[in-house]
Length: 275
Image (cartoon, rainbow, N blue to C red; front, side):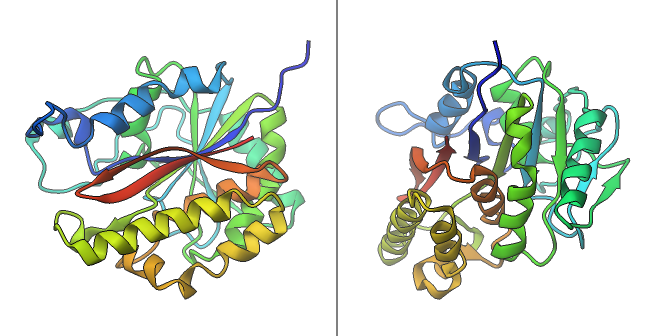
C-alpha cells in the first residue's frame, strides 16, 4: 500500500545543551526544560511511523546567500554554543546524512527556479543534534540539513518550503527547528510587561498558523514585523522564527495547529504541526 504523506513540524529546540545539564527544580519537582524534553521524546510516537530520512532546517544555519544542503556523509558535531560545562562539548550524535535526499532537494529547488548550493563539511549544529538526541536517540534515521537564506525574509523561505513539499510524499519528514520566542537579553528575566508581550505574540502566531488558506497564511506571516509584540520576542534578530516560514510553505494546503506549548519564566514557546 502507498505510504501516507508525512506532516510537517516546527519544533522548539530550547537553549543550548539544556537536556544534558542539571537545573534547579521548582516546588513541584520539575525542571525548566522537562516539558519540552518530554514533548521531543514523544515526537516519534506523535508522527506515527519512521521516515526514510529527515530534512531539517535549523535557525542556526542562517548566513548562506542561497539555501544550502549538507553533503557530509557523516556530519561532525558543531558545538555552536558558548560558556557551557565541559561535558556538553563531548556530546555525540553519529547519524548519517542522506546524500540522495540532498540531491533530490537541490533538484526540487532548481525546478522551482531557486538557486541552491551544498556544503560538504557542515556539521550538526545544536538546533539539530540537541532535539534529535531526544527524538531519535539511537541516531538511526538519516538527517540532511538545509540552511536558511541570509535575507531571513518570509517570502523566499515560504517559496523554499513550497518547492520542497513533494518530499512529504517520498517518505521524507520535514522538520523546522527554531524557537517562537528568542529574546536573549530578556530570556532569564522576570518582567511582567514583557511576559504579556510574549503571550500575545504566541497566541497571534498560533492564530496565523491555523489559517486554512496557504496564501492568506503566508500573507499574514509576511506582516509579522508590524506586530510590536513579535519584535519584542525576537532580539537581536529573528533567525529562530524563519524555519517556521519554510514549514508553512512546505505545508501547502494543510492547516497548522499548535500541538505543544510551555514557557520559560512565563514566556511561552510552541511547536506546530501541519497536516
